[in-house]
Image (cartoon, rainbow, N blue to C red):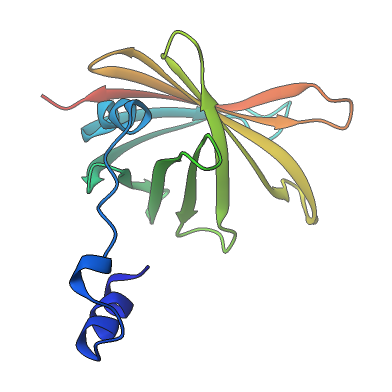
Length: 180
């Protein structure tokens, strides 16, 4: 229940204080996400067309916790003088038994909706999503973002596109290094 609605119901006496649900306690999956909290320098290399030279980009990301259940990351970069901002949200939904989240940025109108899982070694988080096909936004495609924790101060992100033949092609790789 949203906080404002809860306050309104309390104010009119529609519910009593004892009826307010207990806050959810973070699970191990929520704790895993807290490795991402902090300030990061990011080096990205992306190839948007098979024969094109990779684009290289330097950026930053600041990640914070929201109530111990969610993380929110805000990225900042510049593409040839054009500012670029991104917002990432990630959490864990015990009902779905899946990590969930979103991605938005200042260069597109599509909100990417994530659902994914953590590998058995608890090092790799794989997030699946659907979105506009590069080169033909009238079509959709399957995408996969993979976050791998190398150590406490280093992680990677790879983004891949699923082809019509079912194979995954990685088009972007980012290296995240914690700011000291």
